[in-house]
Image (cartoon, helix red, strand yellow):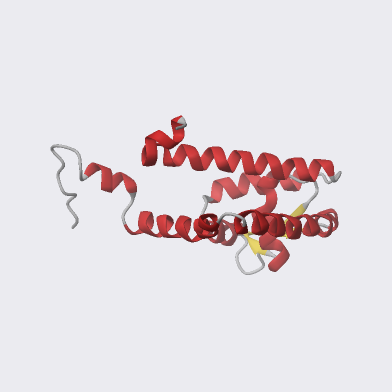
Length: 168
């Protein structure tokens, strides 16, 4: 039994991170082999903008459930590569709108067949293993459970001397 298997839920996050890092490295290898200058970490923003643009930084952060700061940094990097453009929102100048540049649109058209191939390859891979088909549903259920009651609260409640939080 491997180290990761023997520890069960104690290394749940580590296993997900390891799997994620492996998956992203493999996807980056596909882009590189195809001669496409694209990074897997850009996918969520590119995909959102392929569906709707312009989008505000806040709307992107909300849709991806990540911090405004993380999206701002990613968009800044994409802007430096001339893959996106930003402009102040006409209704609220404090908000920045993000859209793909011409170079970004061209790159999007090159990566979309890769996305289709990734979907097909992953579908084929999990079809070969009956229990793998439920992995996305299971991850969704864990995410919902953690939103309902964060892990930190669940763990704290099981520690000696735990006091219930006081809610006004």
